[in-house]
Length: 500
Image (cartoon, rainbow, N blue to C red; front, side, top):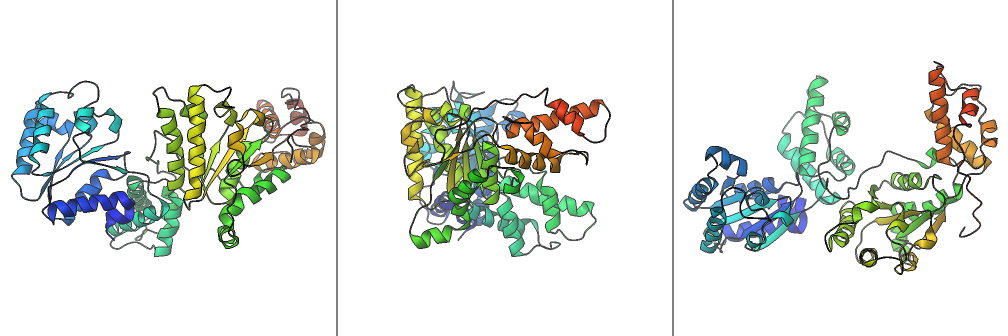
């Protein structure tokens, strides 16, 4: 298989076929609108295919045309079209089509640009490809002229692995001490990376090797460079990521909740073969419910860490869009991103804020719930490891259709910690804080009835500030007990209902 097919799946195969028909089969050339976020490799894949078919690429950039033609865009554009038409096996590439032909109004600088483009397409003599990051910003009369629209998305884990191999093959000939196994290991860490991110990672690793005065680039150089890579893909939408590592032993107490999540979520990834062997499908979703500050978000991150899955936190307000249909598209985009980044944990906090009962929801709320249910049910049709975790303080407010079997069907109560659990939480906090050796955590645990994990963290933080004022090197018992007078307990009443 070719590079485009391996690294971009079906979209890459469609591009490959279009080039083959235009330059090898003498078929009428295509007009293609290539969509994708910054860094996905839109321009690179066009140049790669053109080189493979020995075609010449003529690139139209708004900034270059404006600079060389002193603002006379149509003159520069017409000259570029003439050059491409006069060359055998040529291709015209228009970068950022939305800048040339914005949706509101005519061309940014010169209205005759549209006439030139329409004439070019009617003559159909050369292949035309335009790229854009914002297809919705293109003038509709221009967008409809294109025969095909192809979208380059964030690569799947398999596509990313092939992209990583290609990046190494093009960037390294010698001076590299990396095996195939190492490349696969690096690829597994590069969740949500697009082509530009992988290329930057390799460049930074080379710089690390130069700094350390090593002749060869090795695995350690990539690990050091990893933290400097800013993931560019999907910056404007939901983003799957590796959370800061949170393990079960980092969470004090909550034994029942951790056991329930281990069975419902972590086993899905660790024992996937066993599920297939038994012919059963694991639960697709878990709802964490309980008072605020008890560690629901922390548990969700621990699930992602313990299962080595990606973590996709969803901000509920980001789902509310002003334009008709955009909210439903936002929900769909979240699931698409999770599927491409699988294994992935989708985490929706404050679930009741938008997926409340349909009777109490407005028109937008009902449409969002319907789209949400469609996307959850669609997970049954694909063999992807996507788990949905929701968190709420009011499970009774959530629409019942979301909680039925086959959807968010496992409810896990995360309650206020008892004295033993508070002691465990304090012991976890002690590992991350400089406490005096004389501090008696058992005494503090006995004095913090009604305090949640978040409350206890606030107490230790306040005690640290008090110690800082007194210029102490460690936090002592006196300051911790004094901090209790500043931080009040959440006064959570006993939860008798809805406990498992």
